[in-house]
Length: 314
Image (tube, rainbow, N blue to C red; front, side, top):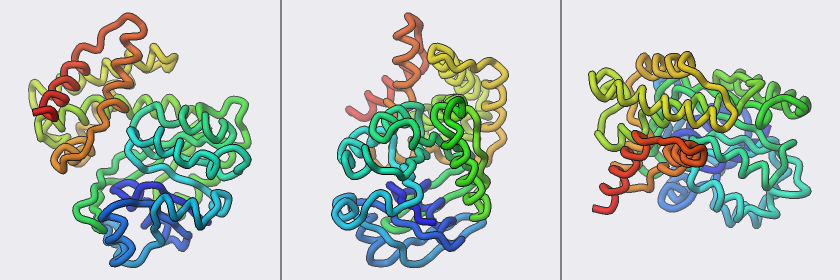
């Protein structure tokens, strides 16, 4: 199959390398020094279960639009930061939107990417998705390190009700991923799964960026561990305002997962260390806005976000 992956960072590069190793065609879209290094020296990817060191097909977004057509691909995967989704889709516009057939899969943080994709390509082409239990980062231009089982959950957006054709397609892609060495499952309710992942993201991402601690040191700390849980509870409350029923059992399950997962630096911590913009709006903002719209408070999430914003201004 032929895959187009926007973003060759920790997530996009890892899954792309898996697909390449399995014999699929992968076209990456990247930018800046990372793009130049990938073009000149290829991709060097290190994972405990996978080593890839070789050339890749990679181009800029401008070259992509000039030289290739969207329907030349079997699947478009978005693996860019969630704060870039809106501008990316606006730029792609007619290249990807009305009149095209290729489905689009989001493998991004947050719960607001899929509605943006749907607005451009329609519900019948929108696949929701999430990368689970993977930590991956660009350590130098052209070099990526990743850890974890690196599972994928995907499904017809927002669920399979009245969307059987896309649900079948999600099952097919899950099988393709499985045969490429990527543990993948098609979910009948991907919106709920996205909110369950946001429990973890809201719990550890901003707090790790603020403290400089990895996930294991955060969750094992007697005070910070309770703070992680409380942040997850606020995210669950926001989900319920969205009509997604997450209860204490969901919070307990996701908290146990992050406590037992191998210690990783969160993406937000790495972004802060490297001076890149943080995904505060896509993670914390998703919780704050929904609770405030319902007349409720997201006091802890708002506090952590405010402290990070103050640090970035210093």
